[in-house]
Length: 553
Image (tube, rainbow, N blue to C red; front, side):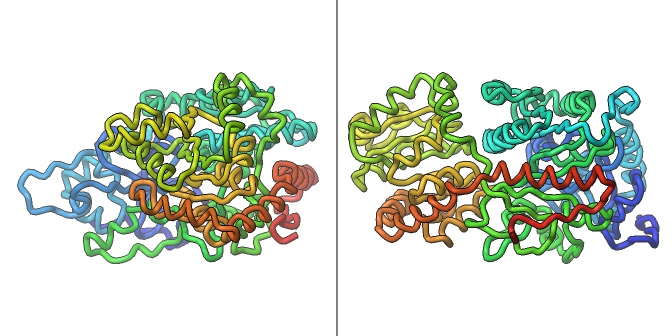
């Protein structure tokens, strides 16, 4: 069937969505049809759980609904957009809703088209609705900031540093974080509200919409003057912006565009390759990112980039772009967490004894990135054994331990070496440990990379996905370490070679020099100054606040 006629105003622009609340079957642009989604920013994960295949999303939000454009990468992705020639091909409602191009729409039979419309009409009915009158709206001048940090520890811990700086500046702050990190935030005396565990740990609540309802009600009842949110909380925060009548500004661990570095999100957006796979050609529509949204809506709000300009600079002269420096908890606060298992806990004494017993070890840890422990454990120990280094290996989500060596073909050699030269630690404080190590091997998360660079030691980055390839490239470009292709493919030979390279005097000197510069920065304090300037301008009625960007000052 032919696509509905597009409206003339903004017909070929994705930001046309922002000018009115769309409905299903309304085209946002010639190639994109509007659907509605109730699964939040993690709906791509939920789709994968339900259908057994990967899905990605492309979204924008208005009023009470989150409008999504989705495409799914199946074993036979062409089945979404054209007949396969097989008899009795069954398209599920999920697959139909994920067909996003005009040609995709045209291949549906009339019966399929009718059934899809019926199904989408049901989906559009939200299971709950907001009543903004039921919640307080403090208005300008309240100094109440909702800090929404969804994701892993790498998203939450920098937010704690920002929250502490905001509290010190006199703001009233509440952090909204996954329930698994509630105790971590509380341990730093930051007011916190626990949300349903982000993404993976509570898929049922997420699928039923309980997660969104809870976080929306919690933030609205807090009544913020300003919302500051992490990248994975973008959908929730943009909806809350409408409901709370409070501006929302994002902090991020990587800029959208940076010079001489890979664009890390592109490899994840497999749906952009779909038209080529099925012979439709390129869907030439620009990304709907926050900069586009703000430009078209006339709202130029600060974007806080929580990394150092010594490490990377955005390739932009936008006045609202602020590279503040890393947001890290100072070592004295972390040392005070002696009973917290995330900072070593009961293993702290064992760790201290190990450090004092010999030469500085090589730290190896992949944090929340999981890979088979029976592969990664032996690989790490073999590399340390071959280079003659002592080591501290983080158990982390992969649960690396001495037991992960038992099934290795050379276990008889690895186990004795590990018992004498390696300490397996479940969790550690990077900021206090890494300065005492010879080098750090890690996955390249922003927080871990920041700690490794500030420690002044060489870094070996073995990325998985997300922003990690970007930080791996930055480390290599700065000459302070080595970038290995990926955690899934890393070999013993590559890791051994990287350890040997990072033992060279030139690399160690470069790492030490960079570390000294980074230690002089206070990124959280700079971020607070940006927020203060923005709120001051907003209270004076200045809509487009354009204070001088930190990255250019």
